[in-house]
Length: 170
Image 1 (cartoon, rainbow, N blue to C red):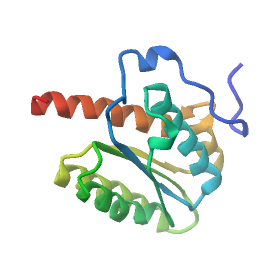
Image 2 (tube, rainbow, N blue to C red):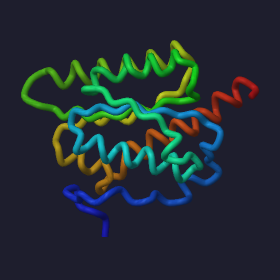
Image 3 (cartoon, helix red, strand yellow):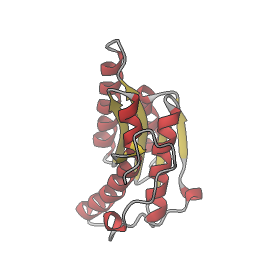
């Protein structure tokens, strides 16, 4: 029986088939995570760390930068990218629609800013920023019934490191 969208247990390990042939060993991957909606972002963070651990990166080797909210993620990620120390960066946040247009502005700024950093610096950015209509949808996507978008963002980042290395002939 799948967990309910109200499930607050930690995210379970993902099926091994999703990780088959995927290795983060030798990859330098940082995480930038928003503090706003931390009850959701914390679960995304555990999912991302879990994916990296399952693919070969020890928890102690994963730098973490915390920022106030999703709007601030692009600037932090840009600084991480400019350092030249990382092969990929995972960005985690959660924006839940409210009664004002604020949701649209923050969501678009985060998505556009993170894509710009990725393209400008040629570095994969694992996009783990939830943009949901309700808290229940966020819970479902942060280790609940729909999976864990933090885990998915980390898997995408590791996959893209391999793709970029292959394209660059490394």
